[in-house]
Image (cartoon, rainbow, N blue to C red; front, side):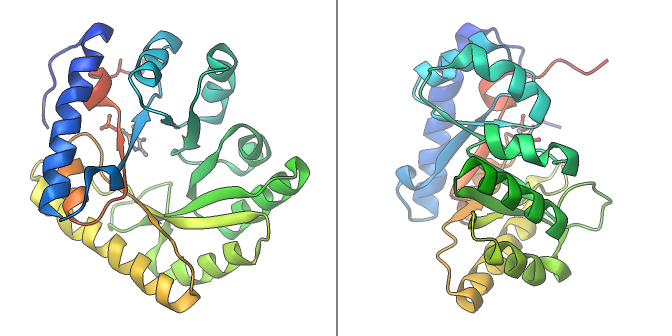
Length: 239
Ligand SMILES: *Cc1c(COP(=O)(O)O)cnc(C)c1O
């Protein structure tokens, strides 16, 4: 595991500058402008002050893992200028609320969730952007559709008129040797490319890469990286 020094909130700006440099260098290696890559600030467990600091520093896309946590924090943030994506596992009984309070759902991984989100989007009279989360490793996980079921799920989502399928997301296994993560990122891009051809959809978004492996993800085509620790320092451990 990479260790990050403990950082006070005032070092967030310095962390952001460092991350931006590394994004530019990785983007150059993948022959793309750094502006092609969206940095999602993962604000789970972070207090409102820390969130306001990154928004003020120019990050306008946030990622949160839990519906209830975001529901509590969001009122204290309004009317700041940002969007928030749900990046954590979504339980079906929270789908209705998630459709209301999130700007995009990045962890859609089942037909039943798609139908519940569709009903929520209908009730909200909005078109809800979504990513399908794909589970690529053999490790057990509560999140993500297996590769073998991706085509069927993509067709179900595409049939939901109030869901806007924008691409794919994955969380690869956490490996000390980040080079070993590269094949997972490459595979997600291949799956996206194949879906794009088959479904004739743009599917512009590939959300992959976290604090310890985002440079590899960018080299493999990530259009969004999700960073928590690299911006804010280590999260407090759950009791
Ligand atoms: C927590 C989390 C992140 C950010 O992880 P860091 O290692 O702190 O950058 C990204 N994506 C998901 C789905 C997460 O749960």
